[in-house]
Amino acid sequence: MSATNAFEDKILSLYLTNADAANIGDAPGLRGSTTAGSLYSSLHTSDPGETGDQTTNETAYTNYARVAIARSTAGWTVTSGVGDNDAAVTFPQCGATGATLTHFGLGSATSGVGNRDMNGALTASLAVSNGVTPSFAIGALDVSLD
Image 1 (cartoon, rainbow, N blue to C red):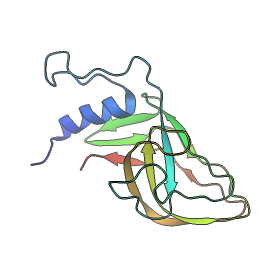
Image 2: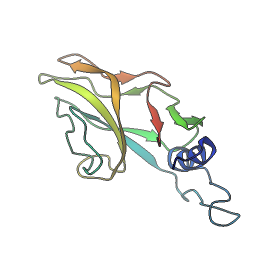
Image 3: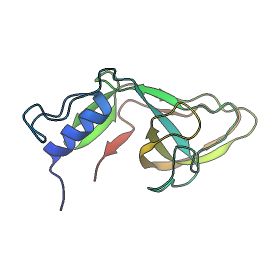
């Protein structure tokens, strides 16, 4: 069974933009958080899979840190079953030790072990070395439930 795009939009909007998801369960549906907060984007050197946490295969290049993305319409746009980032997502510049990045994730913690809720493969691997600043342009991070 597959979810419809309309249902995916509701769930993604609840998760990414903190929008209420009406008519799920009862008329008011699922409600957004009182305080929306942020999601934390992480970078990974191989597929973290579906069972790991935010640290699973997470990169450790010099100066790396996760990046906060607001759970709001300033952070994300959801249409046709896909959520896209509304602003560039820029990670810290790499120092002496680099890595090759293949995946990104979204989770709950700014650092350390946290719930990694979603992850996806990069379109192409990204070699990060001294002086390189990993960044994803507006709309480059696609999040879906399929």
